[in-house]
Image 1 (cartoon, helix red, strand yellow):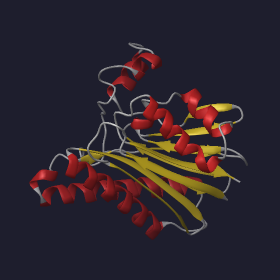
Image 2 (cartoon, one colour):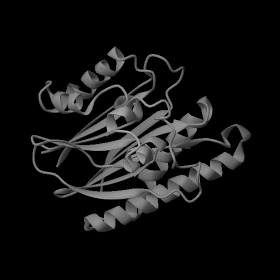
Image 3 (cartoon, rainbow, N blue to C red):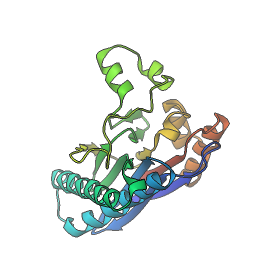
Image 4 (cartoon, rainbow, N blue to C red):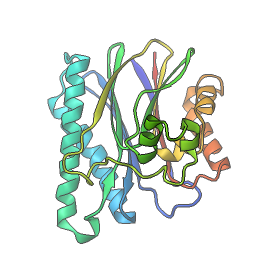
Length: 244
């Protein structure tokens, strides 16, 4: 069983919130998804909304209570592809939406496992007493630079091109998601979040607030407050899941 909390905030600089999130329990599985839209105010909001709605509805259609983690990973990949198609179809209907897109990161529970999928630079973290581990890999220019050894992970946090992503739904008709299966034990947490949180709150701050900062139900508010103390230049969105 999982407990879940969600939060989204416009931040201190942007004029609109282009992030979207949703969580729901379907057929014995907890489903959570976070998206960060791009492509202008209207386009970004539309793309992220379409993505969360299509991902959850398509997954519900094909998901069963008896699916294995591997089957859920395949089902999630299909739901991501359908979300990508839906954004592409919407973009054809209105000129203002032609260049819209969105990131996506999702988590689906399956017993002692959580199936995580992602496209873009929204992230999933596994947090437990042993520490904090990033599950996902960013599809971004700076992540590629880190992989090549051109810059360090710390330098990537402040790089001027850190927000240039190399893969997104809507922007690429064939955008593929990455899939992961993460083992969770009682007391463990999964945190899904957009780059608005990642760019303003360090991994160690996330670890402390989740495990030691106070009650889990107020954790996302505490992380948002840290983001705002750092100027919150982007929308800030997160979903926190706790394994009971």
